[in-house]
Image (cartoon, rainbow over all chains, first blue to last red; front, side, top):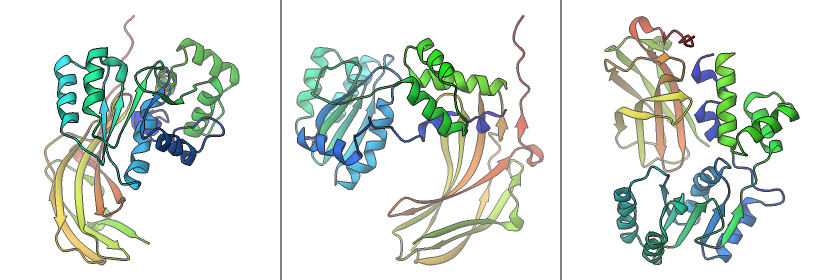
Length: 189
Length: 126
């Protein structure tokens, strides 16, 4: 199978809409953000959709008159790159709104400086692996059932419950890695 | 309501590197847009991060609400349209209209002979 035709190709996975937890609508989630003055954390383990949620928030924020700035920080982000982020944030003002993915990669000292620099902004929404830095707005909840649902949407076929559970456990709940494994299986088919 | 269309001369979608591509871009909108641009873009599909590069941009000046404009693009020498083990590389023409998110895409193949290059699958080391 050509990579472009693989149902688990990155561009297909990235286009999946984020699944909000049961009972929570976008309007309700945005109301939480308003109540928190657009400052809060999306909390969840690696590969659980936090970045996807931040990306899919962007049009909602633009529709409300904000100017979102998405910053992606990961374990490989250098000190110089983090300092550049801090310098950039210091130039921003409302209606700019910071979307910071991977806030736990900043040391406490770096975070305090960033938090202070973000105070003139209209908001600061971050992702972290554990409750920290800012009050929790939402916790992502990966599960074998969610993996099966995403797989079904990508392939039009059902993933057996036992397969979903085994894959989910093998990757310790990291849905992104589960979907990459399914990519490899389809590539070899 | 909006309608966008990219029409290629003789409906050709397969080209060799360096070929000249001609066609028309058509848009039918309720009001004149502020900006209409045609982009020649390559991007990757497959595992991992998607790479993308806008190779050429053709702006259509002073666009009206309903128009058809001709365009001519000289294709570059590389990269070829290909599929390997990890990624495919594809070429697209994208007609983007602002304000709003109006976008129309037309895929083309750009490789020697107008045929996608298919790289052989690597055999695992025994």
